[in-house]
Length: 214
Length: 247
Image (cartoon, rainbow over all chains, first blue to last red; front, side, top):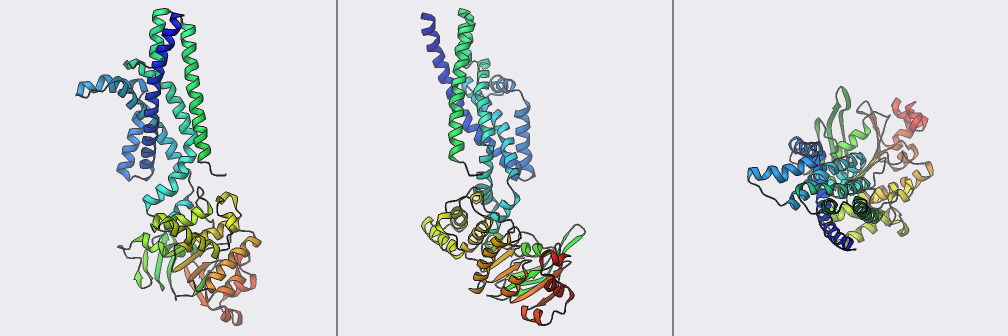
């Protein structure tokens, strides 16, 4: 019985850390994705290229490598960040890169007529993007974005590799002490599943809230 | 109030507009007719600067809008444009579509914008029960009338209609044409591209016939009916416009 009290207590702590990382990284990743995707489509040659480069790099690097660069690499050039913030930064960069592509795709899917109509009533390019194009593009991107966040909840476990005491790290430590892999990793898996369930539900509400009749 | 002087526009080797000149007085309505590819739509889009002409000048209320230091947004606010495909904003309700230009472009307070939008919707006979619907939930005729209201709400000095009923069934087209006619009769300066011949003859002060990027004939409906000299114009009249005209 002692084992379960101790394990579940620690798992709960790990859960809180995981949630903290995701709750910070998810909105930040979405914002970064929106910015990168919009810059990619509407930026001039330079801005568009910068956005493309950022996207290419952080989609190209395995996330684990990005995390190692942030945590082990940056101190060598004098920048120190805690494991927690290194992980959050890595998740934001990775999800932002992927989300930017979803956003870019959905911006391109908005019909040309919407842009013509916006301009015909005197909107500037900026107003057109902000009030006409993005509201439609974001709605179309919500299912893909929720998919990316679902994935982020899972890849948040990679933070164990740079020493963040999140759920997976805690479970791994317990397993190396007690060798009760079936119980430990089943409990861990069920916890991830529960978070995914809640995330899916939240995204369902968001999708419904902003739904426009087809 | 609108002077178009010698406008040219080419796409590669294709000359869409080949020296177009005409003018429109305040309160006048002119209809542009002609076969597909004659440059009608291009001409209309040049006037509200959605297309930049290669050469030539356009004056709106005495001000040259083709000059490089023109504030394009300000010019477009004074010109209502109605598209063949309606182009209502899909994510906004009927009321939202009409209000957004007022609140975001004209920076009007919400209550004033609402009042102005309702007036515009009443002018195009869009009843209150449709105001909260989305474009996908209304008929084509209602969409086009909402699009006209969106343009009208901005309080334009000139309305441009680019084949406003070509995407509509005849019965839905009729309600849209009725609205355009009412606006024209009430003194709204209008330039209309259409294949609806009987409507054109009824509403136009003058008809401009375009062919190959030029205005090849201009005449009032009365002149046309009594003496359809020009071959293109007479074919237009005989064959009833639309596809007959093209054949």
